[in-house]
Length: 166
Image (cartoon, rainbow, N blue to C red; front, side, top):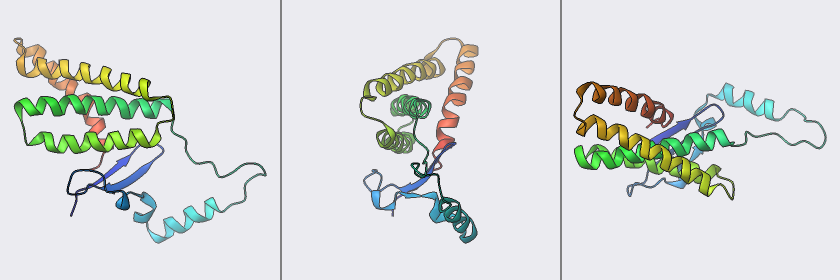
């Protein structure tokens, strides 16, 4: 049985399951509506069934630059954490690797053609910044700067991990 995960942000809530090989199992990737109570599901269907003006379809939330940037930045930060954990805490890197993989799948799912370079640049930029913080924490000579770097690192990674409800 694979490990379950959920992702949420302002416009999207999805859940899925990691297969034994650590990849997202697509047959279990489903919308949050399956977990909603009967009444909530009924109300959601009724609202979606309301007539819309001619020429307009039901508007689904569209991914935007801000959402893509957030996913890419979080993937970069968690990638840096995973690589750092390889050095200092091997077993923790496995959980982080699954989180990075889940974010990568979300990035690929919402990325519009032609945005690869921007998403990769955001990811690398965040990874380099996070790596600098983590190096200061474990290998810096100034304890006060190390403590500040640890707090900043935790502050930046916290929302990324909270977004993936694993």
